[in-house]
Amino acid sequence: MASPTSTFAYFPYSHTSSSSFTLCLLQPTPPRQRVYFSSRQICLPVTSRGAESRQTIHFCSSHWISPTHGCNLQRSPSLQRSSMARVQFIRWNGPLVSPEDHWGTWASLLGIGTFGLWLEKKKIGSMVSAALVSILVGLAASNLGIIPYEAPAYSTVFEFLLPLSVPLLLFRANLRQIIQSTGKLLLAFLLGSVATMVGTLAAFFLVPMRSLGQDSWKIAAALMGSYIGGAVNYIAISEALGTSSSVVAAGVAADNVICAIYFMVLFALASKVPKEASKSMTDSDATKCMEPNSTSSHLPQLPTATAITVSFAICKLATRFTECFRIQGGVLPGVTAVAVILATAFPTFFAYLAPSGEALSLLLMQVFFAVIGASGSIWNVINTAPSIFVFAFLQVTIHLTLILCLGKLFRFELKLLLLASNANVGGPTTACGMATAKGWDSLVVPGVLAGIFGISIATFLSIGFGFGVLRHI
Image 1 (cartoon, rainbow, N blue to C red):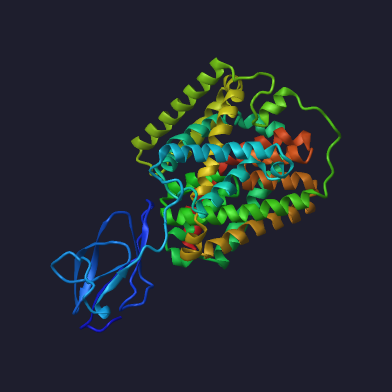
Image 2 (cartoon, rainbow, N blue to C red):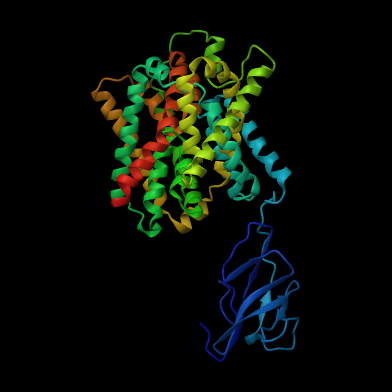
């Protein structure tokens, strides 16, 4: 800090997501304080002789300005260097696609989602699924400054497209059929869910993340839901618990990196398991694998229109319910509950809508996965809460270790355990991708159903576990 008699401009750190430049104060204080701005004029706090006030700086590239009270700061080359700050354009700080560029943002998100679907057809992409490809590409694009971390389009995805896609995804969530069809895979999936709960508890004891305050147990519960049902549950739980947006973003980045490592390990373990005997999949199986029907060039119009209408109606019903009972962040849990109840109560009608619903949800979820990746700032989590990385790593490591050890004890096949763990951590899309890529044709549909079951239960299970257990540790 300079002496009370010196005059200087103090530049606090702040950030705007819009295009901006960096100002550096070189004299008389070190150039470690920076401010980001997006106009030709900025109001800064200026300290002089112990007093503090706000002054307006009009600036030009590379000239000296003098902070003085009561006037605008203009070019003053005659003033002494010790009481002047030099304004420099250091670097362009905004992303290539501005948050205000709505068309560019949507084109980027859809392009990333489409690229994930395309790469899934290739050998390398089939090993990790379209979902993970979209997440990782989105993560790389935002951290490399191509697309923004935050944008109005992202809010639209979370507020409207995600709730709309959940019912479309859950039209097959007939709990009676899932229990009957999945067999031992469902038991392995439940074993993996228990392993995630144990891993969450153990990791929370080892890495309590106290620096996050009340957000510590909330982010732990959200990550637990993510490793039981997938990324959809992570967002739903974060909203329901009121987790701080900065912590949610940090958790997204940590989860993306950890999942990438996890899936590489999982596929390495799966390399030991041979393919099943060659067997052609039926059109019904292919549809249940969440791919558009390959027997026609377009979706059937009436079922598609009906599926969209029903999904909007379910979202409206859930929203109205949460508004009446004033349940904060209850839209996604409410949408999930209503969709599961209706799919179980009216299985024939929703089975008729399921093929169209799954094809639509596949596209919407790809956009969602792109947003999930783009929202994760690796530098943000490193600077604000590096303990989230360690927590998530321990959480997933304990989950995988427990499911493999307990599964071996209970004599489950290795491929059942690996696919169940995949459905826990990645959800139905990654489980489908793994079963298809490894040639486990008989497990494609059970894997999808197990993942759908995980989405159905993870939000409620994690919120209850958070309030009942983690909150009191």
